[in-house]
Amino acid sequence: MSGSEKRQDNNRLAGDEEYEERFVQLSDRMERLLRGAICAGIALLVAAQLLLTIPAVRHLAVKVERLEGIPFERSGPDSGP
Image (cartoon, rainbow, N blue to C red; front, side, top):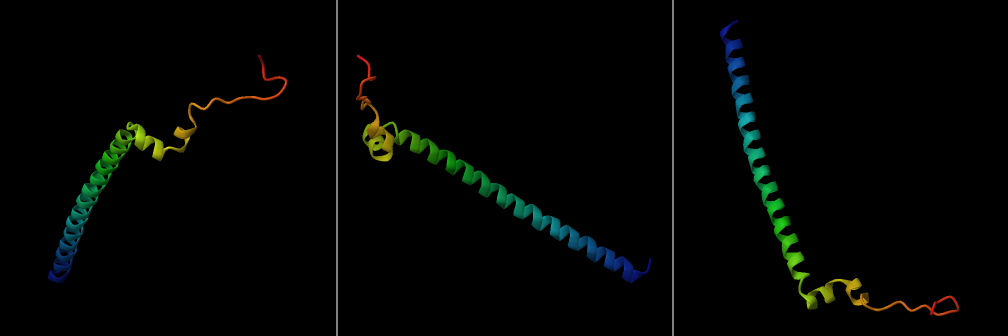
């Protein structure tokens, strides 16, 4: 192998190492971002569930909450006793 071929191989190896280093840095940033997003999602879910334990908030946020407790009355001959 001549001197120029060795230099090209060394340059190629240096380029590969630089690429790997940049890839590791990017993947570390993405991992931190995903962890933060997951933690934020869990925190928002817990906060929403805690807010729904307050009757006034639940009444405003959940449409079905207003319909609960209203009995269904049948009318007609087969409505029962």
